[in-house]
Image (cartoon, rainbow, N blue to C red; front, top):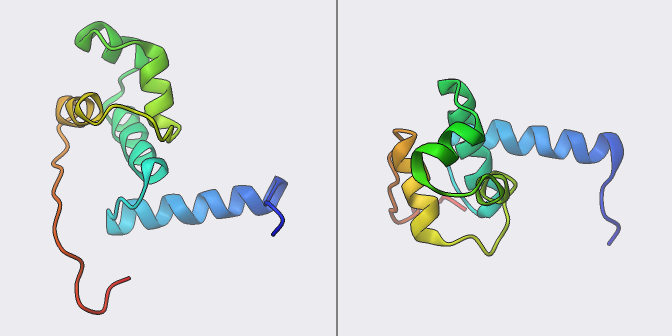
Amino acid sequence: MESSSGPEKAQSAAALEVNVFMKNNITDAETFGMAIRRRRKELGYTQSFISDFTGLSVSFLSDLENGKKTIELEKAISVAMILGMNLTVEPRGEYEQ
């Protein structure tokens, strides 16, 4: 399987972003990071501001927003909470995939 690049990758990322923000389904580190970035920008915060406020490094925040898969869950949850986001885990519907 060939990996996407260029316009195809951009379209894929755009489609993923629309899916994340319309349905609010977080399915992996990438969609979680996209939701965090979007909310931070909606609030007008910089990564540096969040870093100063939380004591978390800008590098950590960047990794979180970029979907790095080895992010520490507790820290990721604290960033979401600081941004005023609710995190809910619930069973998928019978017909949902």
